[in-house]
Image (cartoon, rainbow, N blue to C red; front, side):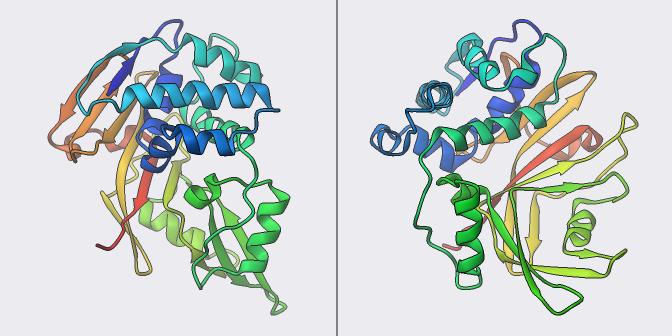
Length: 282
């Protein structure tokens, strides 16, 4: 594993990169040169350059499950800000927004995918309309979910999501997701018809940072998700907690890495994004 050198106030970028590096599907696919050659949209030069640079980082990152060194992020940051100019300054940016833009940039770097393997519960027609409209790539296999709701006029409506945002009024993540599925103000209910492999949960907080409780397991209907990444903002500094392939939790703080034995000992009010991965039955 790698840590990254924080030069020029870039802890927000480092935190986002650590989160992305720990997404197993991305780590595996971006290290596969044959796969990358097939899906890379080379005509979009900046985006494809970014994907290629990230691929190189992933390859070096996962050459070992132990900490192997500290790497500079100057080159990949230069490419990133050419695409996302709103991150070009020297101020402290939001690492969760940086994370979302990394995924968006990667989606632009790859060729649209035509054929998706969908669960029986997913509405194939609505999914096809969505992926065509959004030029969706293989990343939709990983991040995109689908919901079904019945409108007041009886019409069945399908929506798609790449994460869930929870407001600060909820005491727990579970309560926030319950509102996502059942808005008590409008009494609109929706069911998930396609569960994403990776579920980002964004905690919408003010400077007061109210406590929002979360567990390492999240159950949605009969689908179980396991927490594996937490992006933390504390003292105007961004860090990332991540569970590695050896099932050990590590705190990544710029160029430093510290093993965490008790996840509950960390202050939960500082969490700003949680990444859950769908548990696969053996």
